[in-house]
Each structure stands twice: as C-alpha cells, then as structure tokens.
Amino acid sequence: MSPVRHVARVGCGSYRWRMVIDDIASLSFYSETLTVAEMTAVLGLEPDRSHELGDPVGVRSGRVHDSALWSCTVKRTGEDPGTLSLEGLLEVFADRSDAIDQLRDLCEIRLWWSGTSDSGQGGFVLKQETVAAIAALKCDLFGTVYVDDDEDDGDDGLG
Image 1 (cartoon, one colour):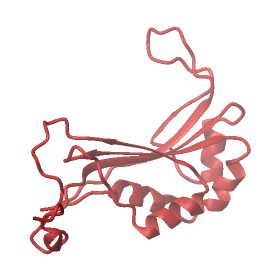
Image 2 (tube, rainbow, N blue to C red):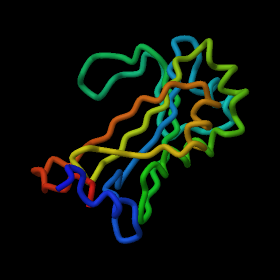
Image 3 (cartoon, one colour):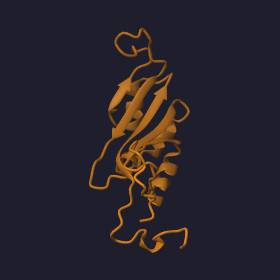
C-alpha cells in the first residue's frame, strides 16, 4: 500500500478543509510625538481604540503608556470566515496608503491578525489579493493562529 492515502480525494467537493474559523485584525499606530487627534486628522478615520502618551495603564497599576495609540479593528464572522477580518481591514485602508506614509516616520505601525483554528495544525490561506494589499500598506504582519487543543483526532488532512 502507498504511504500517501486518498490523495485523489483531497480538495474534492465532499472534503471540508479544517482551517481558521474565527479571526480579528487591527492596524495600530504607536507614537511618542503625535497625539491621537493628530493621527486621526491624517488618517481621516476615528479609532476603535486609543490612548494618549502618559495615560494610565489600567486602573491600579501606577504605570503610564509610553506612546499614544491609534487603532482600528475589524472582526467579521461568516460561514467560512478564514481571513475575512484581515481582508475587511485592508479594504478600510486600501485608499489611505498616502496617509499611512505620512505617519511612517513618526509612528511604529503594526498590522495585527489572529485567528482560531478548528484543527491542531492551525493552517490558513492568504489569497494573493490579500498579500498584495498587505504589501501595499508597507507594514509587517504580526500574526497568531490559536489551535484546537483537543487531542489529535487522527485526521491527517488527507481524507
């Protein structure tokens, strides 16, 4: 018997790939010199989450933030979410690359993406259009996939 099982069935209509079932994406700008209002004016969007340089971290910690934060987050759900939140966030900023470039020297810019997988391997697919949109922003992607912590069910993904 061949060591590869059921290769002809992989990807056929009845097989369901186990992948990312939930995701969230954020584009965050951190600055030691700009205020949230200044970043908002350049980007032309209100942030979903923000704080100013020197604002308290939490209620009782006694610490303060060492930079201002401007962040936009997208969380989409659907029957097969995959990277829908990341794609949605990239749509929001698709026509704002000039604004992002204005902030590049004054901010640390991070594109955050995380997903939850229904398999122990945590596989996901980034469409070529998604990769091109990330490249157009000129931002590094910081990503995490949280994997199913159930014991291996013996499904090796080959059918």
